[in-house]
Image (cartoon, rainbow, N blue to C red; front, side, top):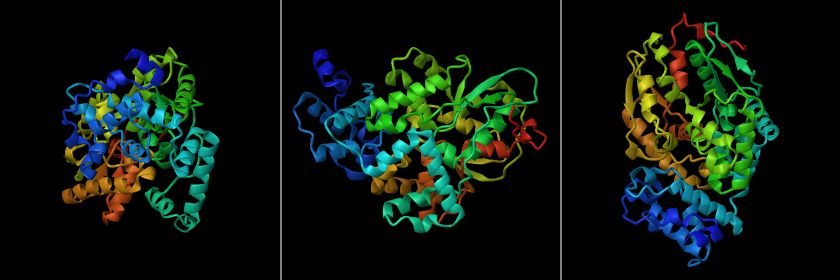
Length: 421
């Protein structure tokens, strides 16, 4: 088996841990949607084993089943054999690429723009200008592009980020902030809210130059060379102070940042992943949080927990803990049984029908709860659910947990304004 694994480049030993017990089936969003065994975790693992050993040919039907996987990793959470499904699906997609399988042109172009800072800036500028001129709804003839345009919130003008944001409080405590790619375009207000919260707790915030996309889009599409290159660029950017926590606001990015040792062999990767922290988990562990008296918010808030927060980072409880610090806030947590929203990085572009059905299920659950606010911790989920709420006629603000916390900071907080250091 080791020789076969070495020759195929696929982790067959990990795949062989799957005993096909079917305990994962009720938790798999795509299996629940199609009731097709090929769209279940054990069915997909069987397909992976088949083409990795040469027992199966790589056909459109086979690649279709693997393409439809969300990589939500809900199956990992319930697997008694602890099968590392996330590693398997990434490796399988890498093998498919080596055999000539390709994603759609739209998905590949999107990934290219996310990788390159200049292209990312130009895309941001173009979308902002089109929104300002009211042209965005008229610009796209393609139904798929019009659908994606509806996901966009009102965009802020492109801007550069100062390298540091200081605090007037005594003591020298610093953290580094990871901006991401999509988030820096669509959620700059989340970064501002994060900086306000950290400054209020006495932390100065540094934003390293040269940071780029985390690599998740490429990692989960099987483009390992591109994902590794992005990981190396981030290791270079964040290597100035290897003792400083690296905080991220998007759980999808955080999941990949935590897996850099599997993407690159650089000795810095383990230390980087160890100090990479979800912002809510980091804040929940701060003793100085006790001295902040948040303003009351008499509102009903529904909390959606992204798959990456539940199944990979496992920090979803920290979000609820933080939000419960706001007086008079009535928190409703969507049950895990509502499943994945269907965003899943580029999945929302490659499998739009399934993605929208899954998001519609979340929107229906939100509508039933009649909340004043919906909260989620991942930028992809936020954009996708925003469109789903519109389809269901729900005019509900959709916020990141840090936005809600920052807006409830006391008026006399030192973090009332963000001042570059």
